[in-house]
Length: 91
Image (tube, rainbow, N blue to C red):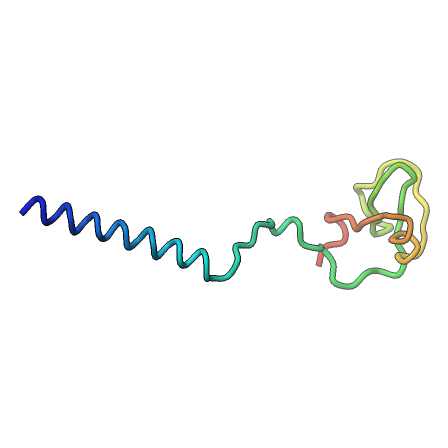
């Protein structure tokens, strides 16, 4: 009886492994990005603030900017390589 139970359990384990492999192979691809990597805004503001030392553009009222700032259009900031601040330009 014990041998039958072990054989049955082995068969179940093998089927679970095969089923898991098939589910991973043929299912939806796993999303490897965290939600933090998603863009934070859907519509860009017309006017943003940037700093010469930073890499982000901000809402002009953002408390997370450091140093002297200048105000410019979002299109100009993007053309200069700036990306949106994830703190002040939330969805």
